[in-house]
Structures are given as structure tokens and as C-alpha cells.
Length: 233
Length: 233
DNA sequence: TTGATTAATTGTACCGGTACAATTAATATG
DNA sequence: CATATTAATTGTACCGGTACAATTAATCAA
Image 1 (cartoon, chains in turn red, cyan, green, brown):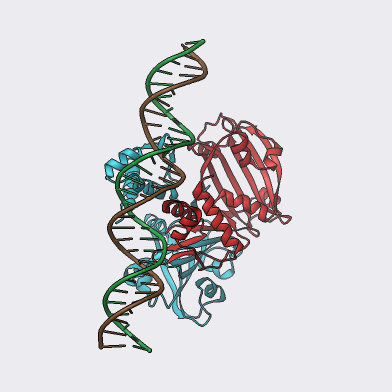
Image 2 (cartoon, chains in turn green, purple, red, yellow):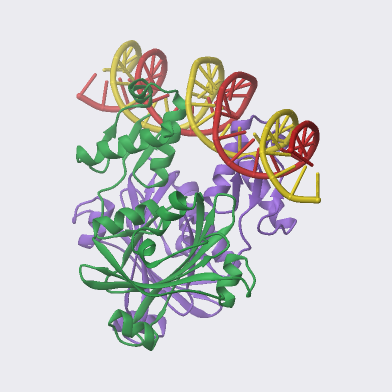
């Protein structure tokens, strides 16, 4: 494991365990260097990570501080790790509605950077939170990269399978949001009414080499969904 | 100006001007070092910035590549710079509905970390895009930090005024989203119907020293609004 | 005691370096 | 000619350092 990753994790745990509040001060850089026996730049890198995640902020000449009291009940749109944690934290379960190999829609083909004749694994599922329907999720996996999928894999963790099982390494994702009204079909799945609000989150996941392998479209139940993210100023 | 900032800007311009597409390769680190006459770590820092903004991605052993074809019409939720650019790009105008000094709501007081007796500048305005109403924006400024405001300042650029005029330095923001139905009043302002979808974006802006100075609640017209952001995996 | 000045603290920008992992190109091998 | 091996390319992790800006603490002056 990378040193700076490890340090970041440790610090986050430390904040959690000691129930540090917004504005509470962490040990100074010098101390952290000694404590973890690494150079300044390594600690700095760890702190950059935490800053990006919104966990701490740094003030030059002053110190390193805890950023906020956590708002509970919010789903992080920022990180996949975050989403995985969210799944556990909120006991989100899911049910696979459809799973097959097919040709992509124009939209999916465009976003996956493939042709309309190429094959994709199409997955449609519903996610539940506390028994309530949370969202409807449609995913298109580039079959030439994600060569095999089955219901069991999907129910477990696709991303785990992709990294561990297939030996691919996931790099980054682009995410697009928009709000609209539910269609009849969506409303039926989410147990809401046609025309009710929905949040649609489109994500294009890429491998480290930049190849898009998954285009997902998630339609959220507006009643259940609250999100948070960090802005970079 | 900071070297790495400058390099990041130059690279972004370069991509723009030369109309580079997704996957196009940029000069290698070594070349950039020589070209800008800086050390490796400075170039790296510039590239980290661009990566965070979603402009490029790097592949070790291979090179630095352009990340995506821009989706047009999307508002960036990630950066304030981005928002400023957005304002110009889309010719967004705004109209101030209310402006006064008052006591904060419980919510505002909590988010600004002040007491219910402290004063805030309250600003309510509508933003228009291509003549259409885009959003309704309510802001609460901690008056002990943002000591004076008037209609003119607001119509220009509040954030410019805060940095230039007041000499404060803006640090970071936390942002929360949720989707809901429009109230009667909101619907009236946005020229929509009660119960129509809305996206509510709450942002808490902080100074570099961590003090929150602005709590803003923006209600978006679902028809006009599309957003994008970058996920960190 | 108050206010200004100075000094110590602490994070950030930047340099220049080594080692190494992942990719790609070149070369050798069957 | 395909394939395995090796070498060159290229980005990332990490070190250790200097200079400096912003904050805070200590000191001094009135």
C-alpha cells in the first residue's frame, strides 16, 4: 500500500474515533512526518487527498483542521469508494431486473466510444434503501473489456470483480446530472407517480488507460436521495 | 502568479486552441519541464490541477492525454471559476429581488456558525439564461465578515468584491444537493407549476481560514439545468 | 494595559534527485 | 512471421532540501 494513502486513512480514522469536530486541530506537519517516519512531501500528499475528500483544510501559518461536522444521510457523488461505503452504511440492497448481451443504444455507444455493432452487457437493477426503492440503474459494459458477467457477480460487487477478477484497473469517471420528470415506466419501478421529480446521474467510468468501460444511468427517487460533493475554488 | 497555475492555464488554452480531442496526447513531462523551465514536481502539480478539473488524464509509461470532448450546455458544479465562466459563456443575467440586513434562519445560522442574534446580509435573486429563468438564489452573508453590500455590488460580482474590495481570501466550499418538488412561491418565480421538479443546491463558502461567510441555497429550474462534475476514484 | 514590532511557528512553492512501475518500442528467438 | 524477451520511454512515489508567506506568540514601547 502507498504510504500517503495509508497516512490519509489513518488520519481519517483518527478523526472518526476521537470524534473531532469542525475546526479541531490535527498534529502539525512536522509531527506527522515524525509519527509516520516519512518526508514532508508524503504527508502533504496525504493531506491533499483528505482535502479533496473534504475531510480537512489547511491554513498556512496556522495548522491543519477538521473540515465539517458530517451531514448524515447524504450520498457522496464524489468517489466510488464513498459509494461503496454508502452501500454498507445505509444497508442498500439491490435486485437485478435484466441482464443480457445486446447492442448499445446510440448514447451508450457514444459514451463507451464503441460502434453500434459492438456488444455490451446490459444490466438493469433496482436499489433499495431501508426497504424503500432508492434508484433505478441501467448500465452498459463494453463487452470487449468486461468479457463476462452474471447475476451473482452483479449482486456482489461489479467493481471488485472488474479489478480482482478481470485484472483491470479503474481510473476515473465523468459524471453528469440533470433533473426531470419521471416517465410512466420509471414511476412504476420507483413506486412514484408519473411526472414526479427525478435526478438522473450519468457516469462514464474509465480504466486507468482512459478507455471507458461502463456507462451508467441512475434515476434517483427524489424522496430518498440527498447528495453532497466538494467544490474546488 | 504561481508557476503551476500558469502552466495549467497555458495547457488548457493549448488544448482549446488546437481543438485537441479526447485521447490526444500532450507533450511528455520532460518536454514540459524544458518548455516552461521548471522542475518536474511543478509540472506534475499543474497536471494534478488539470486532472482534478477533468481536463486531462495521465497514464504511467505512456503519456498525458486529453480527457473528453466537452459536453456543451452543462454547468460545472465543481468550481467557482467554472461558474463565473459559465455566467459569461451562457450570458446569464440576474435580477435582485430582495436585499437587506436581517437575522439568519436557524439553518443559515447553523451553516454560517453564528448565533441567531448575529446579523446577515440576505440576498434573493433570480438568474436568467437566454431570457428564461434559470434559478432562484437565496444567500446569507455573515455580516461580521462581509461588512457591506449593495445592489450594485451584487449585480457585478460579489466574489470579486469580497476578494478585491474586502481583502478576504476565499478557500473552499461544501455543497449539498437534493431534488424535490417546487413550492407555490418558487414555482411562481421560476414560471413553473407547483409540484414540478427542482434541484436544490446548498453551498457553504469558507474563507481560507475555514470561516464560513456565505450560505447559499439555489433552486434550479429543472428544464434549463444540466450539471457535470468529476468523480475521484 | 494597549498597541505596535519582532520572532517563532507552520504550511506552500519550488528545486533536484533516486527508485520504480507500467507501457511501448526494439530485439531476439523459435 | 508470430512470439517472447529485453530495452527505452514515461509517469508516480518518495526523499530531503531552500525560500517564503501567513499566522500566532512573544516582546517591547508608550
